[in-house]
Image (tube, rainbow, N blue to C red):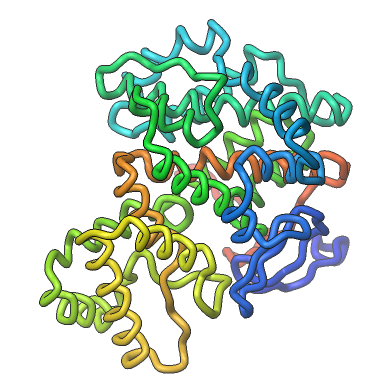
Length: 388
């Protein structure tokens, strides 16, 4: 009896596209409708009307804060967790030097592992839901501090200690620059952060859940998710989309530049999405934010978007290809003064909340995620040849 007859296997599409692997109460993406939600609320509407901390509360505790008192209590719970343990803080200069060529996101993988170890994170399999949630809360609160400290150290600057009186997004910008941010820019970044907290079973979220399904600790699951996010086909694209605008340079170069790339079969970063078959709602929201700032960069981005969609419609008829979240995210972050090497880390500073909520949900299910692969190599078993 061979191995295949002992196990039930089912063929699925490559990349697990469209395959339902579990149930979730956290949210969903309706690609054909151009809509996504966190629990029962539109994610874009939440970004327009609520704070980052409110949505964090929603993802972790199932409800939005009911009033100002509940909101303040949650903020007060988070604030002290922003400060790093001494063991982690002391290790950051060496870690920043070691990852000087790779950047803060690479350093975060090691820093977060160290944070979990120094804080005594235990396997989620061995602890109760309350302790799991406390570990996840601590990790989420520390990620912006770790990212900004690693960035500043890499620039030869001292880290900036977090401020308990500032909201999540404003504190992030403050730790990054050392200056209290302009309220309009802080709110723009906050709306971006809210809009990227979660987005269905994307590659990094699925990675986090696979690791959590083994019973590993929260830091281990988050570290794996960060590794997945770092890939250019996932979270590593906002700065690349902005690089596209730089490469085009001027309005008269848009048409020949785009047409040449499309005919060559090259991917234009910032366009297309594996789920959406209509406009990405995050891109629509971020375009409106960018238009609110105005200026030459925004005008040029809008012109590039128009030409790209026209050329794609001509050369790839029948395909719905629009800007995705990365295109205008890059524009908004540039306008708000974030350095490009911090675009993907900023994405991470939001998505860590969504990953953590998924880790907590997965930890409640003791079933390990263990798919199968179809073997297509040489036909076994063959005799092992003698060494000649």
